[in-house]
Image (cartoon, rainbow, N blue to C red; front, top):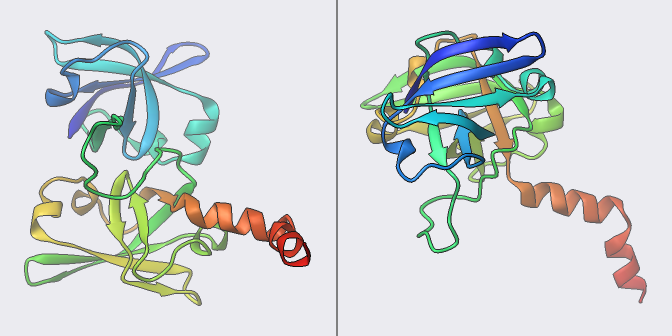
Length: 201
């Protein structure tokens, strides 16, 4: 995790976010990609002695994600880009946020936490029970989908709660969502008539 040190316009047309972090800065280079709450951003500046780095935020990023709601001192999830030689420990997440959702319920059960999120139909159609969704960059398994409520839920075990920012949020706050890209590819193929063309050949 990291902590927001500065967020805003450092020039009239340049929105910049400065983040304090430690481990994430090992072997860092200008132009590296770092996921901030699930949003893939480019390192524009860094200072390893001060343990901080800066990223620029484009207007489309501010419109599409919840990053605009962050404040100085906010904690954020941070993740470096995957190397081809790295052992995979989760799902494929690109850091390309599809949109946002709103936390509508936080419900403890034992040492775990149920989280229910409401989102639009354009995102919910790609979310399936026992599938996965990235929430603020954390790859999580969906438990149930509630189509009529336009919601889905997932459960965070104790370990996950200690290592992501989701449990620190309150009901009504936004989260960034990234759905499984395979679902979008399948939809695209079906809508393009590709499958029908194969059947008729």
